Length: 340
Image (cartoon, rainbow, N blue to C red; front, top):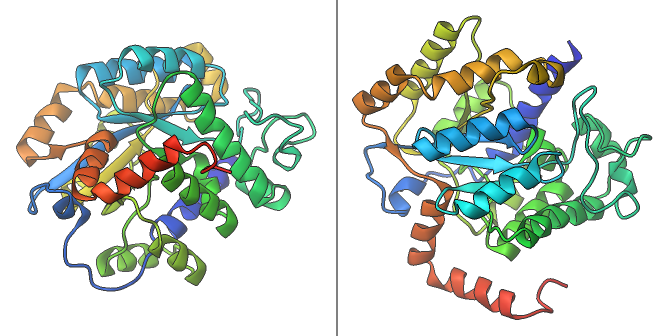
């Protein structure tokens, strides 16, 4: 029951800020702004929680290599980060970002902050691990500590010789407090690495208000000032009681999507006894791994005329259309004092 409440809170946290942008009428979608076809669903299938465990790494490597998914994000504090970082360094043609982890939610499988417990004591529970829930983090950790941990995770990735294609937030924690969100977007712009943010339109506002998600004035102001590209919509793979039900729910989700730049997140993992002892969501995760190697799913995408992309391609198109943004980022990289 508690885990279900945490998952629900995660989605609320993400959408309350991801979807909080000015409620004005937008002419072009982000897909159109970036030169994609105006009448097509442009989609990223995005695997989260990579680096958390061996099983997640195996699924991501397989499906990225086969072209069955377009993007994934690594959790830097986790035990299997170094393995997937080394693989990504050898396969830089793929799109791999950072799933910024401010929590370690599982019962027996835990991790601590990259910045070090002494540097960010408010982020740690009495055992020295990151807090399990977003509410615990929001109660104890300052905005400065969260910013320090975000920076430490980005710098750890860079020190491994890899350039993240994007950043996003594990469990939505970077959206539970406005100072966390400001730090998240500030560092995205500083490093010129896009954060996962959704542009607001009247349709999207109506959709998520109907589902009961909050939209705040503070988040509107923060998101309005964000300078890097955004998504037009954001989705999670639906659950199902059986594999076939889950697959059909996924098909219904894709059919319902409007033209524009869309991302669907999921958590594919190869099925092992170890995975069952890490997470109670092991069945959904193993079905998600199965789904994106299912020939019926590949044929479905072809029939629907889906256009696929990833964050690297998005930023390439954005930089080509906004050369001043790229030049500022390069100037900052050349200036050792620019990050102080």
